[in-house]
Length: 369
Image (cartoon, rainbow, N blue to C red; front, side):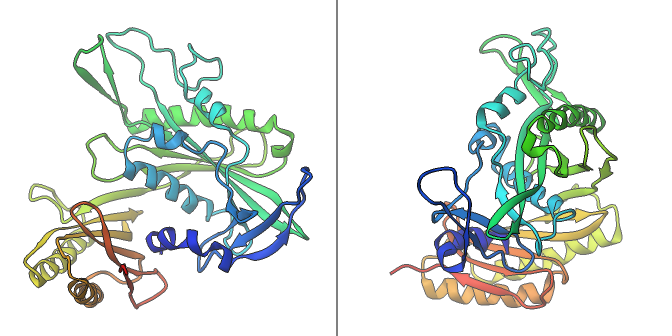
């Protein structure tokens, strides 16, 4: 379960790791360990007791359209990686080959930086959009004796769905919509250039490089964007592109929204029943919403937020147990589900979750001493 794993893993890495001696060019020996990945997750690289962070850490946070887009861009890229690099064989490492400086240069307009992947601005009254908005690198390793070897790389390219600009300083903002087809075409152009640049590094010449294109959500969207295509490449030119048909929706749907399929209507109806049961349990529930992800039109996962005003630990414990029972009764089976119970100021009180390969929910209530 992604949410609970992120909150608890940091403090558990040392206890979950296995020793692995690693080669080092420095005078002090580096000890590499691997955090336990758990079911369906990658093991990750820890060096001298510290998680190995990305060389471009911070670039995506500063360039992200929203927190939701940043989260889905990152987690979605790992989901794409699992199509090619098995969690049973490969070890995840955050990107170590593209620095913050390099990525910022690539995200620039070509007029301000020769390496820029975005076009010249053009007219101030009708500027060319900035299409490429984020770039992320993930490295995939295998254990080779007493060391780790780089065996693959995944690159995520986020493309804007809209571009906001001002015709004059302090003037009003205007918005250009970037169609899915136009954004995808610009993403593919950037992918071809990035692949050639990566192959110039001798360490990256002979590994498979996967490039995935992500379409950002609009600035007023309540959900993040989605990955729309990926390509696995062994050479310096792009191989075949594979379409990814993801979509994300907010449940319950607004009164003016239309359902396109019977399954779509059923998902909304089931969630509405769950919501009504939850809201009737206590008088101070201020909101129950879900982000539902679909792949090829079928529901593939659900993240639910329940906003409360509880202060009593016994209330939280009882409410969490009640949510477990209602989730099992009303929510769909066979998909991963995360339910976050939080206060209106985003303090998490408890979580209820289920993996896709389980029929039973688990929960954790956060307490204090």
